[in-house]
Image (cartoon, rainbow, N blue to C red; front, side):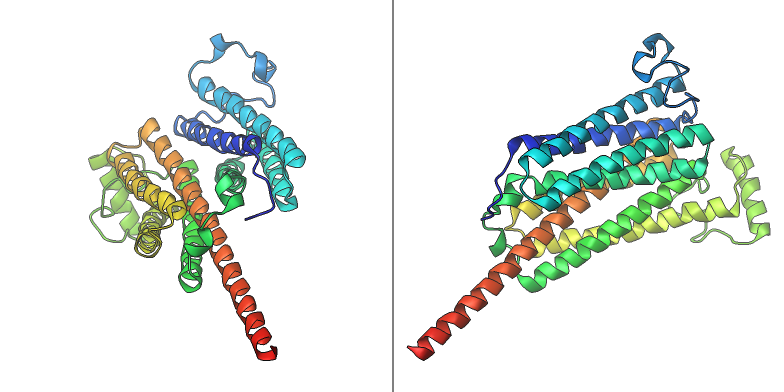
Length: 353
């Protein structure tokens, strides 16, 4: 049992911050899908208006997506401020207080990145902005986990994860986090480079297992795109970027299936780990389905944006699983160490009695 006291207020603020980040990411996906990133060309104002007094009558077309995205970002920013203040008032663990401060710094940086992307009309900043949003979602999710009653009071968690299997589980989970984040980075680059339909068929690439690498092969593909798919020409770079995203999807799926299988086989009694593992099954199936539909339906904005948002949920859920697994492993390790020390002391006492 930890000496740290559970604060319902702090935990609810952490949950609200994480939950509010999800629709913000979805709206960001809609901004990109609709090509609305520059629909409001000034920042921090909106067509000269204060962002909060911009007339709703002017929220039309792409302006609606971009302006709504900015307002939702402001909500997440305000929640992050409240979370940080609450942590410094209510939280006894110094590292948690500083973690919430990092969350606040991250949301400020994210807002500045979004603004600079508009001011400088910079595609690279748009990609960084998209990737950093995923990292922020992970940070907010971690705060929600470590402020929970289950984390603080940790009833029976030390007996639910043994040392060897716990180490294997945490290692695999950490590898999954890295792989999922890398996949989302590739996806963000692909979307902003408009390479989402660089390969318009599934499961092959223009009828081949691997797309061509030569100029002649690319020329043949572009003719096929024009006559068969009625799509614009594609570059080799975009072709291979799309292919890398597909390969990444296979790698991520294999890793996540392995993680889920290990959790179900060896840690079924640990409900704290079982719930996110079961959620990952549903999210992985949904994400694959949305990815396939995005290609087959020629990238409709809502489906493509849902694919982005579900990817964020997969990442956040994997992070939650990983942090929980690390907590269980840490507690089991402490329990074993404590037991070993007690046994050693008991043996010494017997020997000297």
